[in-house]
Image (cartoon, rainbow, N blue to C red; front, side, top):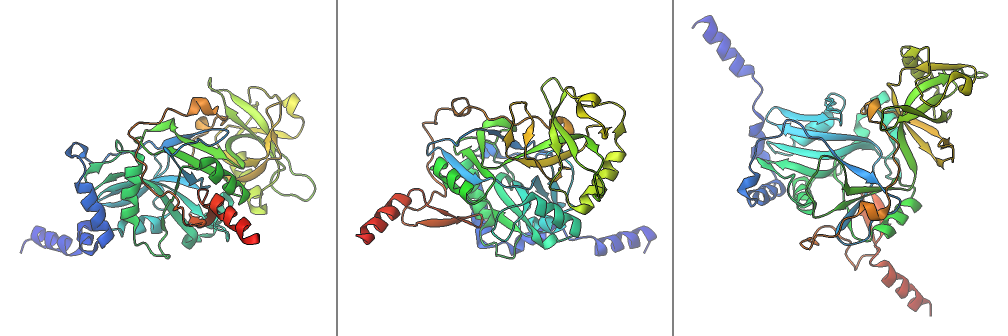
Length: 413
């Protein structure tokens, strides 16, 4: 036997088996999902897209009303697109950065679904004991290597086994997604992001009472549209936004690292506008590591278009506006400065130039007329149940609440 033949034989014996062999282990739920996909129009048969620009939600002051909207709990984590092909699963950020190595167990969980090609949209989070996602806990888990705490909530299915689903109505995509994820046990890090159909204002108020960040409302009859639009709307209970760091101050007393960071956001012409100082929410280790990161970005002049050194005062060090952080705050002052801001963590998944002020759009401008062909299918709350668990958080059934209240009144007579 020649060397080439021997080499070829060795390569064949050590080569990784193709992922298609995993198809033999498909569960009944996966086969049902494939059967549903086979019923889709042949016009949806296309190759797997190389990249996806995520659909983004527009901030509004109040949630939309109507049964043409579904509502999900707003998650506080990293938005990641998962692209699955015969080579395996890849997790991609909004900037198209490959974060598969950061979350290998999540990629492995997607590969174990028994599918050959698919694209999922979702968010990686860490849940606190109450089942609420926490960005700070996510940062801590990443730093400590606590990989078992990561949960990947999937809320959309954009491609499945040769079919491009982006032009299909959202409710159909979510129905397929539920079938694909059916049968995932409690040990699986993959979760289906559940929703309520209609009753948005009541659901929003319940989420706020439970200390959640807010809700995301989506038109059930619309396709997946890349970029920010008005088919997806977000309503916040707690003010959390991303800001760019443009400077920092020296620490006082026995504090290490830095005193506070100066943050801002970009306006449409591209000017960095000052939004205030953030001096709380830091761990001791973060103060030191953040100081080291910012020292490498030092510059002589202010990066803010509306703040000079004289206005900022002594002890300020300017930096190039490259690092993005997440900040929680109570409100904006009339001078357009953050009130009671608290640092939540760095956002490595977002480019600085993409950080703009997230001002709510009036309801009338955010909502379109309902489609006459809207399908009222999906996971609306059953009327007979008073409560339901949505993403591990118990909420009352808005439709059943009046009946429950009437029953309590009748019982008390």
